[in-house]
Each structure stands twice: as C-alpha cells, then as structure tokens.
Image 1 (tube, rainbow, N blue to C red):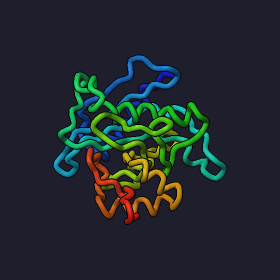
Image 2 (image 1 turned 45 degrees about the vertical axis):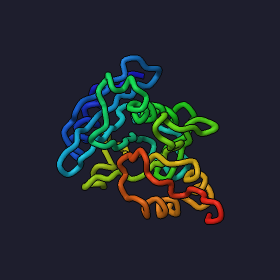
Image 3 (image 1 turned 60 degrees about the horizontal axis):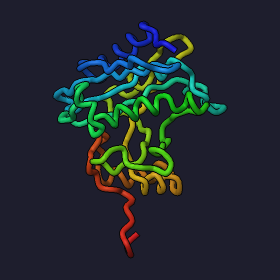
Length: 217
C-alpha cells in the first residue's frame, strides 16, 4: 500500500511545527503492503535530541476494541541523544539502527496482527525477549505520551473529517520492567521508572527500575 503524498506532507508539516526543523527523511524504498518512512527532527536548543517519527502507519486503520474507535489511527516516535549517529552509513551498524528497525517493525505490528497500539501497551523484542543490540539490555518497548510543549495539539492530528492520527512515543524497557507492568499496571511501572529518570530520551545504560536484588526485592 503506497503512502500518499498528501498524507506524508501533513504528517511532515505537523512534526516540523510542533517538534522542530526536519533533519531528513529515511525513506523506505522497498516495502510490502505498507510503506513506513521515518521523519527525523533535528536537535534544537529546547529539545537537544533527535526525534524520529513514523509516517505511513496511519495509512491503515488499526483494529481497536469497542469504545476505542477514536484511536483507529496512530504514528509512533522515539527520541535519541544528540550524539546518536543517524546517517545512512551509520545505520548499517545495528547499534545505531535498532531504534529505526523497531519503529518500522512496530508500525506494522497492529496491521499484521489485527490489533492496536495505545498508551501503556508494552511489546517484547521477540519471544523469548532478547536485547535490541549488542550494547543495550533493553528487551521491550512501552508506549507513552510524547514530551512536546503543546501536547494536546501535537497528539491529535486531524487528517480528515473522520480521521484523527494520535502520536505515541516509545520508551525502551527491561524484561523485569515488562514483568512488573503485567503484575502491577503501567502507572506503577512508570512511578518506579520516573524515580530514576523522567527523561524519555533513550539512555543506553539507564538503571533497571525493577532489577531483582537477592534478598532485597
């Protein structure tokens, strides 16, 4: 399914308006029935990090449960440190590419499995879960509200009269944190994570908020 030019331009302009200048677009040259491009917003003085946003996920409606019809359409994003290597050549190294790979994979996930992605959902990296690359120990993602100054305006992009696209940010999490969320809920997990850091920018070595310590957990 080809992504329409009008659709791309609306998402592109929305990202530029609420996040910042566009550094570039990582276009998907070969795709299946859904084309997923990655819009890369450059670091700014107020947002000193890269923001990568999908464009194409919202071309198709997700399969949402009854009562959640307003959330048929979504795009996902992730924030990376300003030191992250993001050139096409850099992306040949999986240590740099894994956030892009996950954006593309998770953007397709609800369409391939007739489900939806929404705030608080967690998704493991493979089964059984494994780290995303050799230099990180994260094994899953949590969907959260993006850190954008005008969040209400950014979160809701009115593409058509009956089509609103919502934006969710990805937060890498550890296996123990996924397990904790399943037992205690997403609010309890976020409370533990935010005691360590409220920064939603990817930190390669963030402390595990739910790490089991013998005799103390």
